[in-house]
Image (cartoon, one colour):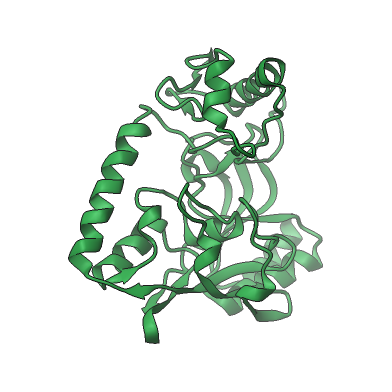
Length: 302
């Protein structure tokens, strides 16, 4: 580790943190420490970092706003890379916008709507970063973000590469980009519209979302994907699990595809509820639920 740190200190211009608690970087407010937490300054700095990590055969992962992430209680070995400084936003010709992977979805929606650009209203009130949203092809009942993509810019150890929409295999909650590099920005195709009308649409959507998802604690949004033709929350409800609690983790009675941290929940508590929900739904409905949240890290050493 010391040789790795010396190399990073010598070649990397960004911020370096050791043993950074991931509970500070996840919406669940759960998670053990990342061995290294690294914040690159720009594209070139990210490329340099990837080269160093490859040279030392160090595992790494990228985090955005941590809204779709469960970090186990033992933390994350290796490196966690934050793209928080990739925060540019630029309106281009004919309604396209160029946006950095570190920009939050709420900020992106707000900026677009204020400039009279239509297309992102369905994402009103959804947390997370644009980078994470693109990687998982985040969506609502109305649309998925992949449908707006013109092109993506990624970084690898070899430098930047650009993929057009035709070269990205967007599917339900998947982009197929995991092995192609780190997404640092996207160009999205939007349409010109009246800003005041768009703002009213967003206000209505935000109000509805707050009513449905006012679950009363830290959470990560939908835990399970919707099986084809079905709703995960309804299957969990039918299995009699709304309000089920392990430690300080609870399946919400307001929206039972959400697991809430009531204050001091551990990743182990949440994982136990996840396995309980999968088992009970399978027994009741014959449906095997699939996780939408990403689970990473290692178990705590007792």
